[in-house]
Image (tube, rainbow, N blue to C red; front, side, top):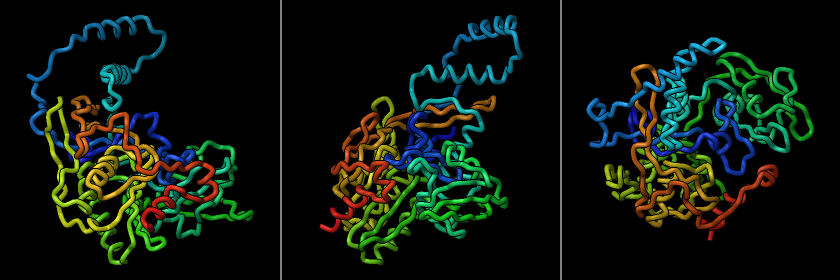
Length: 408
């Protein structure tokens, strides 16, 4: 069994319904896409072993009478005017069976879908140019150039409006099609024409594997900004390294930006919480109402005396909600932005003998206050909207509010 928190069997915490998967990267963004494969934050499940409540022994399972399925197939085969793909029929039957459980996060996955899920969590976005784009003023526009990637080295900048790709006009195309035209195999070249301050510029950029670490930091106005985009295997280590850099710069306070962070491994959230908390309960997991796992902070809390504000939005989910909830509970941070997604369950992934995989809700997680956030989310201490108009103007009222709080 693999449990999703998501990858090798570690607690994770993200998940949102598929309809909300695309476009939640930043709540105010119209439709955000990473030109390295993401069109929005994908679902991330909690991957952890829940000891004592799981078994793959046949004695645990009831036998389901599937004779009606066989009968349906027999009638279909005998009368259908067309060719039947039995593999697709089997996958459809399994998918329907799982969907009937009525849980948005319990799903049937093909092997390819399971691989995509894991790749997303680990930041494996394929090859592209390393820029994040969104629709601004009805045009595909670069909103963030990832450091140490091809787009930055070529000279692309935030605010560049993409006019043509490989001599084809893309100003009328949906954003996902624009992204698809920029993606490609590493080593191949894509020609991009942009509009910058009324001037057209052309760039010929060699695609390469995207370098997109889950954590990065900067200092603005004497305030440290620690941004976490997902919780993967390296997030805890990267966050501690960036925190040490910020502390060494004698910052006046710290902004933890979790906007659009759809979650990842729960262990990553606990590791990051340990930057502020010393031997404190970060989250508990319950199955049928009973606590089956308790996760506590550990290590040197180098930020425990650093005044902190956390930025959240509707795309802040699961592991990032766990982190934000724990830091606020222990009075280590206040929250600014919009109510978070509200994903409070734990999933596991099981390999099936015929090649598919089953993602199942195994348990629910609770904040240190004993609250499960499913369907509710965390409500910020300071509610601040980030509108498309703000983004088009290049302003960030949520960030500005956080700075004001820290500089008081």
